Amino acid sequence: MSNIPTDKFSDLTQLESLLIGALITIIAYSVVILFWKRIVRYAEQSDNLNDKEAVAFLKPFVHGTTILTGLYLTVKYSYPDNPTYLQNTSKFIFITTILITALTLSRSLDRNLPKIFATLDERKEIGLSRSTNLISSVSKLIIWLTSFLLLLTLFDIEITAAVASLTVFSLVIGMALQESASNMIISGQLMLDSPYDIGDKIEVNGRIGVVTDIGVLSTKVTTPGEQLMVIPNKIMASSTITNFARGGPKEHPERVNLRIDIGVGYGESPEHVKNVIRDILQKNDAVVNEPKPLILLTDLLDSSLSFRVNTHVNNYQNEWIVRDQILSEMIRRFRDEGIEIPFPHLQVIRETDDVNEDKKKLARVKKAEKEEAKISEDLIMERNANLEEIEITRERLNEDDIEPEKATELQERLIELESELFIGED
Image (cartoon, rainbow, N blue to C red; front, top):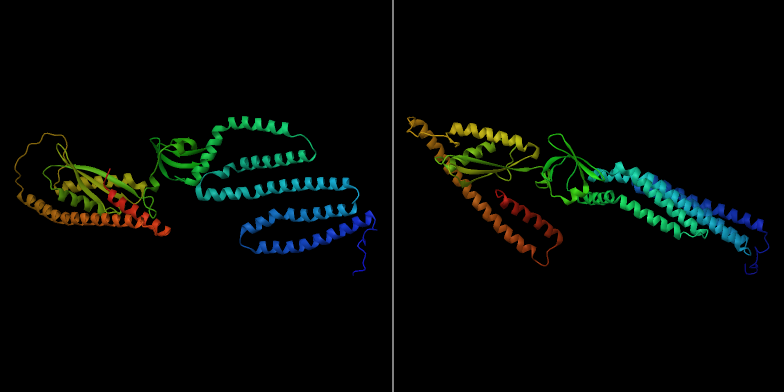
C-alpha cells in the first residue's frame, strides 16, 4: 500500500474525472436514499404528525444536498486549473439552493398554516382560519422577495435602491393599514388572554349581547333585540368587559348571582318573612344550594322593612326566568301567610274578628323565629370560621419555605374564602 503513488488519479482525463465523480455521486446518493427511506418508514409508522411533517419538509434538502455536493466536488477535482468552472458551479448551486428553500417554505406554509390556524381556532375561537389565504400569501411574498434580493446580490447587482424603494413602499402600506395592523396585533393579545369565547353573554360599553364571531379585526355581538354589533378588537381590548358566562367558579363558570329586594309591612316578623322566602328558594330547582342563599334585613324605610335576597342560579341564561318564578311565588306565599306587601294607599285599621287566623299566623311566626335564630347562629359561626381560616392562610402564604404549588393552592383557597364573605355585599 505504501508503494502506491500519491498521484494515482493525476493522469485521468477530464472526461474520466467527470465520469468517476458522477459515479461516486450516484453511489453516495443511493446510500443516502437507503438511509432516508428507513427514516421515512419510521415517520409513516409514527403516530406523531410532526414526524411526518418534518420528513416532508427535509425531503428536498436531503436529495438536493447530496446531488449538489457531488456536483461541486466533481467539478472541483475535474477542473483544478480552471477556477471559472468552479465559480460558475458555485453560483448554480447557490441559485438552486435558494430556489429549493423558497419552494419548500412556500409548500410548507400551504400544508401547515391551515392546520395551525384551525387548531388555534378550536382552542381560542379567534377566527384565524378565515385569514389563512391572506396571511399565507403575504408570507410567501416575503419569502420569494427575499430570495430574489439574494439572487441579485449573487450577480453583483446593486440592491440598495431596491431596498430603499421597498422600505418606502412598506412605510406607505404600513401607514395605510395602521388601524388594521393594530387590530390584528390586539387580536393576538385577545387570543392569548381569551376574555370571552363565542357563545358568551357579555356587556361592553353599556350594551349586552352574545358573542357570535371573533375575527382577526373585529368581534361580532348580537344584542337581545337581534341587532348585530361589529366592534373593532382595538375597542374590545380597551373597554371594560363584563362576561356573564365566567362569573362562577372553575367547576361552574356559568353560575350567576341573583339579588332581589323586597319590602314588607312594619307589622310583620322579620324571621317569618325570611323563613317563607327561604322555603321558596329551596323548592326552586334552578337555585343552587352552595353558596347558601342569604336573606338579610337591609333597611328600615318610611313604610316598609326592606329585605335583600341573595342567591345563585345554576346558569346565567336562566337568571330572569328564575327571578320571575321567585317573585311570583313570593306574591302567592305572602298572600297565603298573611304577610303584607306595602304600596301607596289609604288604609283604615280595625280590629280583626278572625281570632283563629291570627293564632295560626302567630304560630307560624313563632316557628319561623325559632328556625331563623338557628340559621342566624350558624351563619355567624361559619363566617367566624372563615375569618379564622383566612388569617391562617395568609400567615402560611408569608412563609419563606412555601412551595410554589402549595402557594397556588392556598391562594385559590383564599380567593374562595374571601368570595364567600363577599356574598350579600354590593
